Image (tube, rainbow, N blue to C red; front, side, top):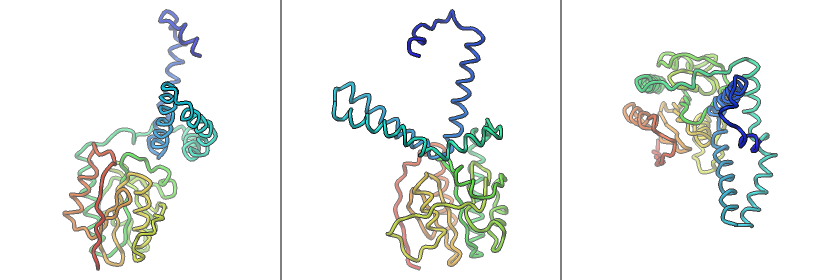
Length: 274
């Protein structure tokens, strides 16, 4: 392969070469669309760090470190297909359905983002006043496609009325979480991982544990309305901020959902006694 690239020249470019290059570009683009919506991005970053460290150790002559990293890379050859099994399965499913392009790849505007936040805050306020439990997850950089598959797809424009109707008691989709991608309600009744933390108050319910769990594993923002107290909480990076009013909730969401946010945020645990 390397020798072929070295012998390559512009004079040899023809229609076949152009088609060959385009196919490779499209395949990598398709893989990018699949990976960017999952936690595989973070895993790939970890693999890239190991590869870079292996190259540096080899360059500096660090034989022991180089040997350890080489063994790690050998293990990754076996582990990667297992770790990326959900992504590989999803890629094959989308290939079978012909879903090569994903419209969610295109970012939505700041106006739509602000409108979405206002609608979510308005719905949370209404649900809190009615003491109707709710769990709303807003996607940021880390994709939530694997969790979408556990729920019912909706693909509707975010509105306070839609969210309030979803969480009405005894409604078909009121159990589970709503996941928002961009300014669209992507799915409802989604199943989320629960936090395994042993330091939480035993009074914290399943919705709050799910909110903490999903934000421990991803950079999503999770909003919870308590069915028992009607209080509103927000969880980011596994840290729960409780008893928020409408103004504070709106300010926090506007801050956390800025386009330039990379998810590396620090939060203070705030807890009040009921």
